[in-house]
Length: 53
Length: 278
Image (cartoon, rainbow over all chains, first blue to last red; front, side):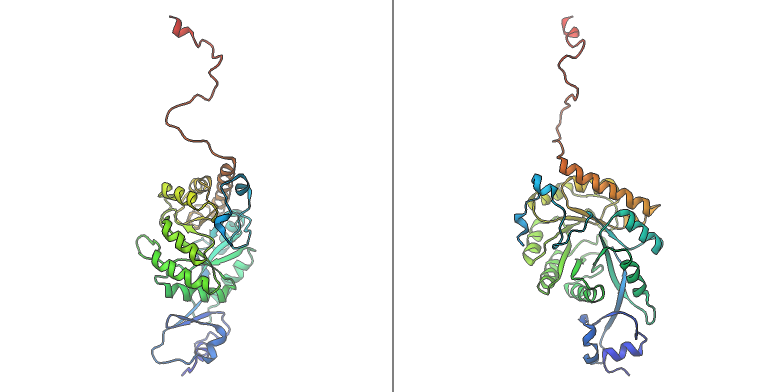
């Protein structure tokens, strides 16, 4: 069970994928993922570049 | 920078190159990267358009997918500047978080700020837009707000720190061109020194040319090229239309009038008085 956002990304298979993250609608910078402790019910967004208009 | 002081509606202003937050993009066409039949067609369309700026976005990534990395490499290969959008965001909070995620991934402080009010019209939520623009500008972003022709909103966006405004031509994806030319002309005249880019609703090169003839500084479009029968040829058509419209604006269009006025001189017209002598 992942304790931090960094652990969650590693466990879920995002190890070497370049993504950006948000927790409960608030941006979490890559450098802060290791110290971002998750709580039950947190909503995590994991996004990457795409085409756009 | 006091953009209001840099009057553009003068011979000198009309000759000045477009500058967006201190950057000269080279082209007055900004192109979206979505909905092309293939990545190859997208790349060729961008090249044919001559665009110096393309819009991009963020979407959810699956584990191990690397879809984002592939797209990023494609875009980097185009040699153009990217402008991430906040498409689909409905609240300032969503838009701010999206802009922050985009800044980290695309390594730019530029953001095309969309806060959408309504699913059917995709019209901007102007209250949310001003709120998000204010927060993002304070955080160092260079905000390109997708807005309407509303002048008081425009004033507030400028006060928030926006140096560029992007009013809609028509609702996103409709291809209807300039739905409210009177209001767009008013906006152009009201903000003579602010870079104004028509964003959304463009369907045909003639729409883009009309915006440029009106004195708009640029046009941002996507669907009209991406969904064309031949996107690469359409990109070239838009490039030509935008250049033509800009050149016409620089040249100075004639005033329209209600009654006919002969273009061939009347003096010396043969048989001119014969009819009258009868």
